Image (tube, rainbow, N blue to C red; front, side):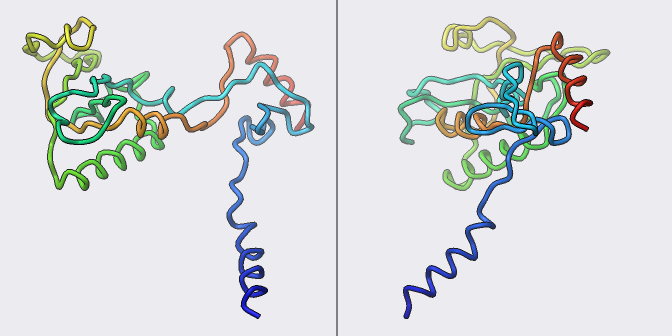
Amino acid sequence: MAAPKWVIIFVMLEPALRIPPITALGGLLVRWPGGWSWADGMPEPRVRDQLLADLAPAFESLPSGYPATAGLPCTTGWIGIPEDWRNPGFWPGGCLHPVATREIETMVAERRRVTRGQVDAVYALSPAPREGVAARRQTAPRKGAEILGRAGTWRVVPGACISVDVWAAAMGVIVGGAWDPDDEDWLLGRAELLV
């Protein structure tokens, strides 16, 4: 008798576990496993996936032997997230994206939990100054550009080191559709035909 009860419970939960499809243009473009299509089923090759990484800061990648992470297993390297990661100067267009913000908060909180509150020292390029705000003077660490291979105003700051694998998994999530500006008029015209 127990087997049928489990089957019934599974059948009852299965519809609730379905994730709704990702859409754009008010649901007229739908992301299916094979790519983007219009609601009428016509494929749309001009639309590409917009990943969470497109909307989040591009923090510096640190080598796997980075000293702040000594003793913690990671073979792929680390992403150094400075404590002031919410500074608009780090974000594309100066705008914090709510989903990216939530993901970064979750990763930093998990890092703090695993390391029992340890704060890592990370190399970070100074964020772009906002319009009308004088840039603060920063002292560049002597080997910062040499270690990470980029020139700029470097600083060593408190932060959190997140495994490149964890960062890639979180930032590789599809959050919408994107297209070239040249295609926008055509896509909006096609959407109007479907309304």
